[in-house]
Image 1 (cartoon, rainbow, N blue to C red):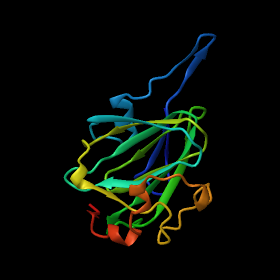
Image 2 (cartoon, rainbow, N blue to C red):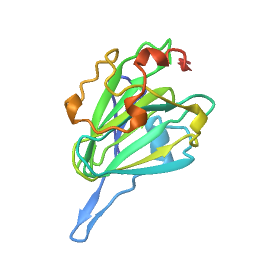
Image 3 (spheres, rainbow, N blue to C red):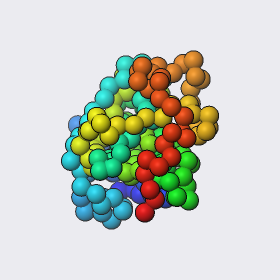
Length: 186
């Protein structure tokens, strides 16, 4: 398994090997021991899957507050996405900074986003299918969001604002400054 720490070292890009032959391929996409070796030690309790039919769909920026904060191991099994993690841990040396990685069925990479981070993605293809493991169960009362194109974050999205396809909830999300105090850096 290839492991790469990004510019925010707590965010990890993991690429499991694929073994191909004339029938197709096989890949071990999750192994608790390999993940621990990579630095991903929290237990997963929920799996989620989404399908975005259009290119330019933006989902995020989302998180859940403690005690229901979620770490996420995200992968794209069909199509491609541009996945973003933003450090929302007050007091962190990387507070308000973001990192991104392209995840696709071709590169087979997965992105580990720890608790205390906002998460979002933009579809780069039609019919993008995303699967992710979570370290916390969904809790509607703990759910929070920040507007995807927050001026305060200056995320370099791969689409123009007029191309973004968003939910009503995500369109109404506040600027990043609203996240101050949601999480503490430990």
